Length: 369
Image 1 (cartoon, rainbow, N blue to C red):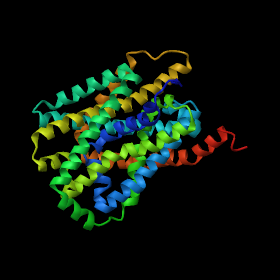
Image 2 (image 1 turned 30 degrees about the horizontal axis):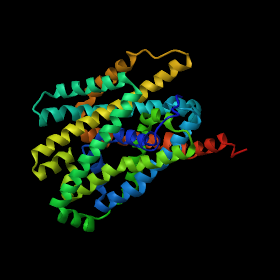
Image 3 (image 1 turned 90 degrees about the horizontal axis):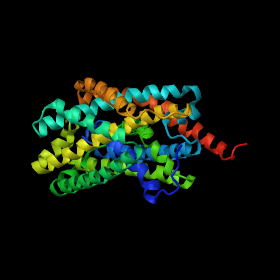
């Protein structure tokens, strides 16, 4: 795995989390659909408990262990990492990852097409094609360009989410206060927090190319712990704003559009949709880049370089497949598709990395005889 001895503090501690957040947010998080499905359905308080006490803790813990594992075993792609972690069973992760990737690409294709169709009165297919072109370009440019773009757009996204949060807090503070004080706590908040964390952690391979910046255990663990917080903060702001519209918003296909509509600002809606469109590109880029890095790893083992044009070719093929599935609808894709894979990722990634992974790290460092 390539190392970067002159990496900056930003690249070591913040970049992995920003890349992780960039990939997590586009597959439904950015529309608010995931937050409604996994958290607000358990009530405002139950949702906060599931988000902060369960999902965030699991995210931070798994990211910390995974980054340190990847650093020690020089795993710059998921095939290398899971070969060390699961042995021959590594192929199980790849199968599940590919299935999740297709579902996520279907979600972002559906959302991208809908944004241009409903917000800008443009053709649905054009929205999908523009997204494909942007992802193909970034994938073609490679890791360094992807790092810069994903990190920069994350700051833009933070700014817009913070503005939305403050605006809703000012306009609907009474409704938010009532919801948080009397919204109740659903019984499933803990399980839903685990489910949400488990399937989202499957996107960690999208951040593996950042591991080359990590040189010590302290850097790897710190970057991992921060990743959980960096990944959840925009969601927390969004969630609190959503509580002002509880319980009606739970069943909305795109809660973000509903909220901004209630604010009555067409200009902010346009801005949000542009930013959301960018996050869709980020998510698709990160997920597909992980596939390309896995393929590049095989070429590297054969002492060959991955053909340059193969990267955008892989991206195009996967995006077309996702677009075909996009017509199933956001709610069905998230509730059924993600839900089915959640438990698989829990058993083939989360539990193994927090048990056998820690044992192997200790053995690698000579702690275990």
